[in-house]
Amino acid sequence: MENRELLAGRPKTVLPIPHLYCPGCHHGSVFRLIAETMDELGIQDKTIGCVGVGCHAFGFMFLDIDLVSCLHGRAPAVATGIKRSLYGKPIVFTVQGDGDLAAIGMGTIMNAVIRGEKLTTIFCNNAGYGTTGGQLAPTTLLDQKTTTTPYGRNAELEGYPVHVAELIATFKGVAYSARCSLTSRAEYNRAAKAMKKAFQKQIEGIGYGFVEILEACPSTLKLSPKDALRWVESHMMEEYPLGEFKDIDSIP
Amino acid sequence: MGEQAFISGNEAIGYGALYAGCKHFFAYPITPQNEIMEFFASELPKRGGVFVQTESETASANMVYGAASTGVRAMTSSSSTGFSLMQEAISAMAAAQVPCVIVNVQRGGPGGGTTQTSQMDYLQVTKGGGHGDYHTIVLSPSFVQEAFDFVQLAFYLADKYRHPTIILSDALLGQMMESIEMRKLEFTPVPEKDWAVGLGRKDGQRRMIFPGFVVGSMLREYLVAVSKKYEQMKEKETRYDTRGLEDAELVLVSFGSTARAALEAFLMAREEGMRVGMIRPITLWPFPYQIIKETSHKVKKFLVVEDNLGQMVEDVTAAVTEQAQVYHLGILARHLPGPSGLILPQTIYEEVKKIYGK
Ligand SMILES: Cc1ncc(C[n+]2csc(CCOP(=O)(O)OP(=O)(O)O)c2C)c(N)n1
Ligand code: SF4
Ligand SMILES: [Mg+2]
Image (cartoon, rainbow over all chains, first blue to last red; front, side, top):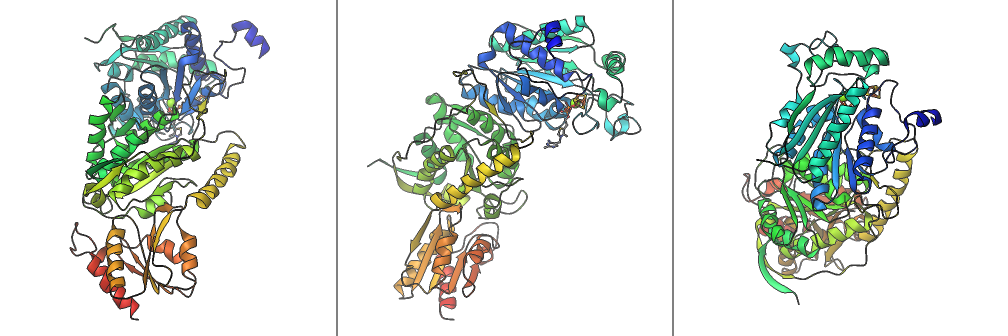
């Protein structure tokens, strides 16, 4: 622990608490990125985080900001209630998994962007349900084996992987939507830039900021941390292109 | 004296909330509750408040959860089927100890049911509704004045106990107009909301609102704390109205809008010299078991009148001593055996006469 702090340092917004993630899980890095972004923007004292239900949520424990833990899929509704009640003053963001956001909560996120909320969402796409043991998510790849698609995802039965960052970009009230990965230092840096923009769009009152992050869940993929990372590169990035799908400075 | 107004039960809910300082309202349209949200849609923008028409009752309740987490007084309203959709969030607010007010203007039937009145959600609101071991205080207005007053009371109780509070109205009361006095009710001070998020970390500490119990002893600690809270609510907040218990030989028990018809039947019976009494539960949870139990030491006949197939009758039966007989007059006794109608005072009076003479 100490040595690692020496190596990488600890963002101000991170508490010195060990996280609960499996080796090679990317969720820890996502929360570190969020903390670094808040440090950089200096918004720790006026930011409220809303986390969903799933492994992605456990990172709340070491974020030193005000937090509201939300029901499965409902974080954008809770965030709406918070942001509006405080008359837009705080910075409010959600962290949601692919089951949380794209399955049970798809209607909730869609309606938040339809209403033109000024929020930020960090979408953790690890192509499946981590917490409950590796079931199919709407983002699971075709032919990918999960515990509920033991023969692989079949388009005839389960449809096709959903591209959320592209979908979000189509809504008028959205100011920023991007997809990133954490597969290399260069990609990590790009993700950091994207995250900063997604918060800035909210801070400047322009519109919704959305970042999808492709992540590995080595435990349910049953791969080593390194192979899981390579799998994100070879499989997920093939289905889900990285890039910025929307980046505007005013809603036309 | 406050201002006199001739308004509907639904509007009274709206005015009551404004008098309670509630400026944050989130709801989805449903009959027979629409006038409440339309009231806020026109009143809140004028007063610098927040009104959001949501995409569902699920969203309404979750927005209230977010809003109330910041310490503001927040509210939603709906009717039966929409109220069902809120249960997960109400359970979460009980777990996270987030105070708010939820209004259910009941309609009839299970499923989509009808838009006409009923009292069919009694068991749902008093025995949980959502999952897990929780209760909420449930206030049951019978008059438009009470609808106005009870919203203020509900916000006070919610803040006092840091807990969601429910108002159980119905289509009849919601649509009915009566003359009321509008005045701000005074209550004892409520605790500071230093647990709320978004206060700017004055003490440097983060605030967390959490409806789950992930770490080892959290659930146990919560259960110990919340059971104390429930005991206090039972002891201090049980409310009811009684009439003629001194010499009663038969006691009517009725709540909400149906209690108005029961009250008329009570007056008719007294007029005829029958020694009839009445207990009107005002808090449906905590339920006034004690007064019913005490009364049953001398009164041996109870007639429960409610606009459903028999729900509160279970609580009354549980409350009375063994020697007492509990009769029930329910929705099948309505003067119109259709989706609409109500149990008329005359029908209740006839039933009273029948049982009284036994
Ligand atoms: C209403 C409801 N249904 C189901 C669950 C069970 N559940 C908990 S986490 C989860 C899936 C989470 O998957 P995802 O959002 O992808 O998060 P990950 O664990 O992959 O980070 C489910 C189904 C729940 N908590 N609440
Ligand atoms: S199960 Fe998957 S998502 Fe959950 S902590 Fe482990 S690696 Fe991460
Ligand atoms: Mg997932």
